[in-house]
Structure formats: structure tokens, C-alpha cells
Amino acid sequence: MKLNVTLVKSPISSIPNHIKIVEALGLHKLHQTKVHDDNPCIRGMIFKVKHLVRVEEVATKAKKTKETKETPEKEAEA
Image 1: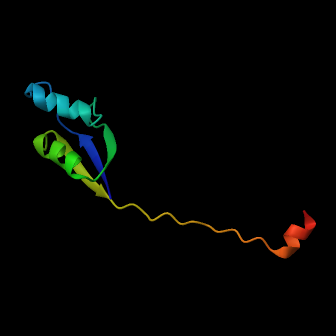
Image 2 (image 1 turned 120 degrees about the horizontal axis):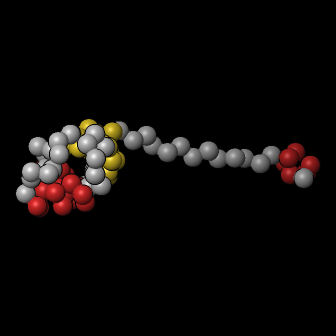
Image 3 (image 1 turned 90 degrees about the vertical axis):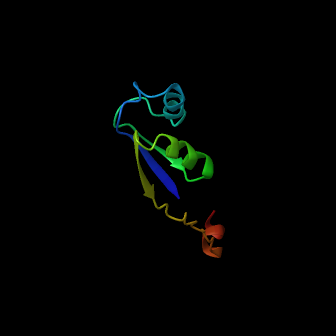
């Protein structure tokens, strides 16, 4: 699962640690959105700056692999 993290409030007046966390999430401008993997590290960062960001869960689709089967007719033509 992936997380869309959007900066909705400026971290200018926040404590320095929160500013560094927002930058570590890759957010620099208001309403900028980054997609992150859902893991405990990212969740902890989001929890510390939850008053500055909006988080949406994105369901990822399973990758479909397309298997190509060569037929004897195609091999004979080549």
C-alpha cells in the first residue's frame, strides 16, 4: 500500500525538528504531494507532523505479468 502525503500548512512557525521531518518527506511547497511506501518509519514521521500534512491511502494494483507463448508456426517463419 502507498500513502499520498500532502503539505497543507506551512512549517515556518514550527519547531526545527518538524521542519526537518517535512523536508525529509520531500515536501517543500504548500499543496505538494509525494507518494511513500506504507511502513512504520514513514508512519512515525507523519504522526509527528500530522497537523501540517494530509494523508490518503492509495491501493496499489497487483502487477500482471503477460506471458507470451511462442507457437511453432511463428518459430518456423523466423
